Length: 189
Image 1: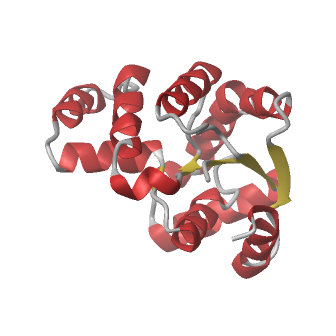
Image 2: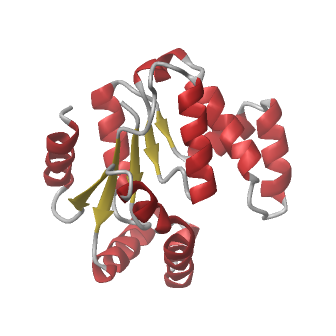
């Protein structure tokens, strides 16, 4: 099963993605994780990505999608993948569709889970995470910018997948366990 998790920063998609990937015994794919692993392992794509990252530039889609293609080619991905905030744009989504179709066997996006959380709750979570983890990207200013980028670039994916009948909205408030139960009910895992 190939599942995409959408939601603004702080919506819980990372936490829920990790839980779901474990339940499905599938790789969890997030752009940041892919890039950090490739750079750490000094893979050819990782070396290319590092040159962009070191300059503070966005890593081009060609590299990110190449890393995703490597995951798809792995044995653990045969049963599907859980995509956490990836793809981020409609062009990436179209390329993901192409890569899945190239696998054969009717591989496609099965479900898109869209986590709904109010802006006030997102801000509260970011403040808590910043205090607990000391993440530099959780300052109020950085969080607002990430939220703007999400709404500009990633939120349109919901309409893209909704038109294909793939989107299921998941209320993202409550305990981790409560949200996981909602996910499990939708996914059946």
